Structure formats: structure tokens, C-alpha cells
Image 1 (cartoon, rainbow, N blue to C red):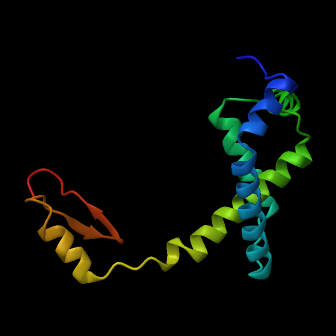
Image 2 (image 1 turned 45 degrees about the horizontal axis):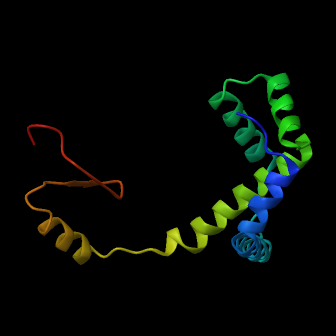
Length: 133
């Protein structure tokens, strides 16, 4: 896979400028919310994320550094981006996912309308039962 030329990058940017701008604004607003809520990414979380990426792509330190260089990042810039991603994930979890509440009645209605499929509710997860149950 080849890298894009500067002209190709600019063309893609111009074609998607409004969407890029909107995403950047959303990200900055979410980061402001995170700061106000004192949500941050620890050095350990960032190191864990980097280790996970290295393992996923089977890269050693040297290969990882080379990959960053090809993408135009220093290790510190990459860590900053990872930190932002971790923080944004925490904001979404805290402000959105944790506020989704499904009542027992909604669960019963769903299960009653699931056309004969049986479920077992355990640890807040609906699971299909094992064979024979």
C-alpha cells in the first residue's frame, strides 16, 4: 500500500473539510467536558494501549517506532493522540453508556416477543442458554 501524495491528501481533505471540521469540534468539546469532569488518561493506560497495538500487529519496539515515523508521528505525539482517544472513550462511557437504563418490563417485553428463543439473564448480559436447557 502506497502513501498518499500531498496533493492527494489535500484533495481528500477539501472533499471532506466540513465533516473533518465537525468531528474536530465535537472532539474538542468532548475533551473540554472531560477536563471539567476531571477525566484523564494515566501513563499506565497509555502504555497498555501501546502494548496492545504492538501485540496486535506483532511489532517490536523498533518496528513500532518505524511505523510511527512513516505516519509522521513522534512517540510523544502518538501518546497524546492515544490519551485523547482513551479520554473520549471514558467520556462516552460515563456520559452516555452508563445512563442507558433498560427496565425489567422492557426486558420482559423483548423476551416475550423474541419468537420462542430462551434467554438466561446473568451479570447484566442476556445470553442464549446452552443446549439442553
